[in-house]
Length: 221
Image (cartoon, rainbow, N blue to C red):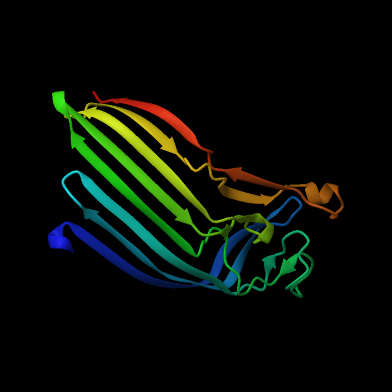
């Protein structure tokens, strides 16, 4: 606790060691193969805090560092066209030892501000601003480097007016105001390798919504 109790700061260190971690990887044709990665280590540090600057303003934020490594994964599925780390276990098997898993960005962070003020006639004004950062990360279970999500900074905001009894609220909401293209999942396109005789492959991906602005009304009864 800091600043006479108006602020707090939390620090967490963690380390996990896995054996036989289950993975599901697409083989580039028609099958998803469930495999056990031999060993993996996940470790890092997380820092978060909040500070009530005044009765009306709250500042909050967090920062995380994540280190993920497959320390033993000789039987990983090869991604399409992979020519390195071929393992001697048959076609389509590659050694992913030393690589990161998908959706494990090295750095992540966020900072936000909440502002609240009582107005006349029993009204309450609330404003929130959030800035969210993520380092780059893989998005395909096959660990295909072509399916890498670039680092991004996303901004969300909200302006709202409500009654002091909190029974109703009218808000203007903006999400992903920086209009970032953010992949939530990607993989090889099923049957594309099969139809082309293994000469090529297609890909698909799901994205978060682009920039959006909405009006939200709430009534509680």
